[in-house]
Image (cartoon, rainbow, N blue to C red):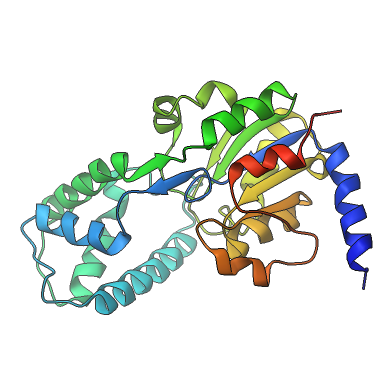
Length: 258
């Protein structure tokens, strides 16, 4: 096993050769205005369905179960990379969720209405972190190519435009479909290919070890873990992972592209 000093030297050497920095989106460059359980309750309420009789634990367990069901559904039906981007793609998943809570006989139209309300809420759910725009702008000025690789079912382009960072990005890759989405490295490799930078010369920044750091390792990229949303994650960070508490600390790691 490499000594701590050797690991630091190896990371330092890799830093000097980095030409592109790719980012996860959710809870890496963004924060959220509400928790997922509250969002679920509000979206259901918009469709005239009250979830007040269910505990947070019951709803959380149901959401996890539905996510597992939907993942298997997408694999079994060999869906394309952008499956989940249309409202209609979520009819059966939402039906499964409500049926597991004992709420049955909902029409497709009712489920579509709830899904549309959910999507409207999502537009204001994520907000750009206060240090994100300045940090990305400075990294771009220093010569790095920047990009987004996110595990989400819909195109984030409009949000990125609204936040004022779209023009800073050279590539945007997104999917939530198993096999394509993180922790699989597919979107990271697509991004590197689009910007014509060898993955070994890319860094990938994310907040999740299970999704982001593993995807970065599988893609051959330098993994960078942000810990502001999960401070305890640093204890389980794999060897060779760089750790930052805030996005602005990236400016200390990446002084300029050589």
